[in-house]
Length: 76
Image (cartoon, rainbow, N blue to C red; front, side):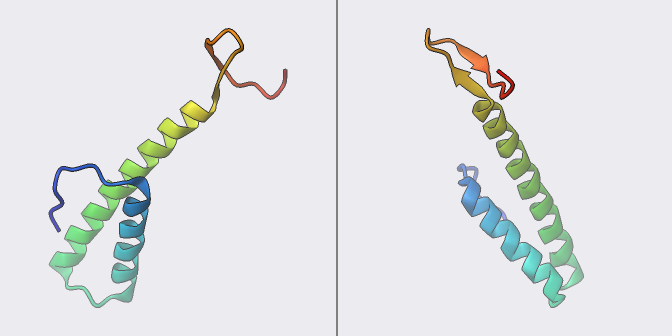
């Protein structure tokens, strides 16, 4: 279950998370493996959530005509 320290793409993390959830829902995993898979799934879920928050912050910014970055506001 140990992963190398190299960065895994967001999509790969989501795919791995879905795979682990499927295995845990299946119920054919022994207790020790279940605990290890659950802990890894929680780590992946946090990493995905953090990445989505970073992306949301970037999307909520726009580049103005003068090149400065400003908050995006739909009400303007």
